[in-house]
Image (cartoon, rainbow, N blue to C red; front, side, top):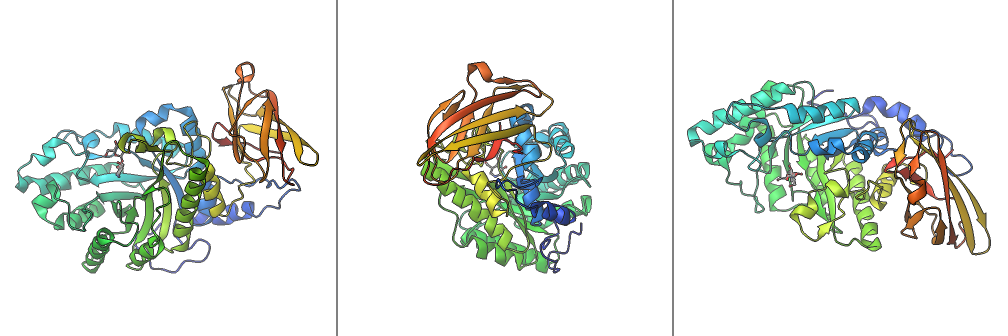
Amino acid sequence: MSVRTPRLPRPTPSRRAFGAATVTAVAALAAATLLPTGQAGAADTSLRSLAEAKGIYFGTAMTQGDLNNSALTTVAGRQFGMLTPGNEMKWDTTEPSQGTFDFAPADRIASFAQTNSMKLRGHTLVWHSQLPSWVSSLPTAQVKAAMENHITNEVAHYKGKLYSWDVVNEPFNEDGSFRSDAFHNAMGSGFVADALRTARAADPNAKLYLNDYNIEGQNPKSDAMYNLVKSLKSQGVPVDGVGFQAHFILGQVPSTFQANLQRFAALGVNVAITELDDRIQLPASTTGLAQQAGDYAAVVNTCLAVTGCVGITQWGVGDADSWIPGTFPGYGAATMYDADYRPKPAYAASVTALGGSAGSSPTPGASCKVTGAVNAWNSGLTEDITLTNTGSTTINGWSLAFTLPAGQTVTSSWNASLTPAGGQVAATNLGYNGTLAPGASTSFGFQATHTGKTSLPALFSLNGAPCTTA
Ligand code: 9MR
């Protein structure tokens, strides 16, 4: 994959360099004829496949501890094609004391990515935060050499293994002035060019990014980033992309988002959404979750609309592993998956924005199968659902998420506990039927009112992983 071709025209739909090789096969699958039930054929409707079919990636962030959470890793591997270590590549982990490097934690994340055929974003080399105190205590005259040595060693360790590096993270204050940190204090704004050049020398193929928050819309901070990138490009400094973290507040995706990404792309750099989340005041209401779905769809549509937007990364897999509640007390529910890794409306909205059908979810290799039957009358119906464990490991405790056809509202259920009763439903096992050995099935059912649509629910996923429905 060429590093220096963002200006070159690319054929539709692979108008981006990313994922072009998979476009034909996935597009062919996506075009599979719909079956009479409204379920797609063998199409893989994961975020990663749908994104790749559009020529972009959909990624997530994981930390070391996440590797022990099987519900999380299952969703991560199936749904996301790009991975960013949440903390493990930061300076305090990789060079905790001067000249002593530790890449073991990040290597564990890299290995997970490799096992699951995910690409990696390196995050981050030069940042004022999560910086060991020895760096900020250095005499000013020694900071440049320490920075270059840090970059050289870390980038060399991952040479050829990373898609991109966030070389400099969060260099600006909100008013567009440079943040006064160890690097700016020692080198002035020239630290950015020096860091980029050092990284390029250590790995000529990784795409080199500048990354920041609150630069998604047009404002003094994004103006500063724009002017910096323009100046770097005019000096021939190797900068390949700008990362827009996109830590949004519900309902506040900036109206200038697309125009802003567009002006950066016009400078000849790629743009990427690097840390997407959308925080909601807790408890999240149904209306809030619907607004969040709209926000996610807006982000996906924005990236798709901007040639040069290479992909989107969500910061964390599910609400349980998001940084938001710890930093913004009273806020949370910021990702596409709930605390039990069940897809939320934002997931369905993202799938739809990527051209998938929220009503079809079969995935090759899925470990669950769902069949159902409906008995409908004027304004009511009963549905019997059978869930089969088609995987090779025993399921201990299950939660089957699905989307009801519009107008259906559950009024009672049996053999499972159903919450909530409208729209997105989660059916959870009762005490007696939580264990499903490989090949085993269990059935539950519910009664619902309807307003004309009497079809079966759609988008079934078991503990966060999509089920087949044939
Ligand atoms: O997700 C990271 C969290 O685990 C750390 O505690 C936090 C410390 O600053 O950093 C988080 O990630 C940050 C990212 O590296 C840069 N942009 C802001 C993110 C949220 O703080």
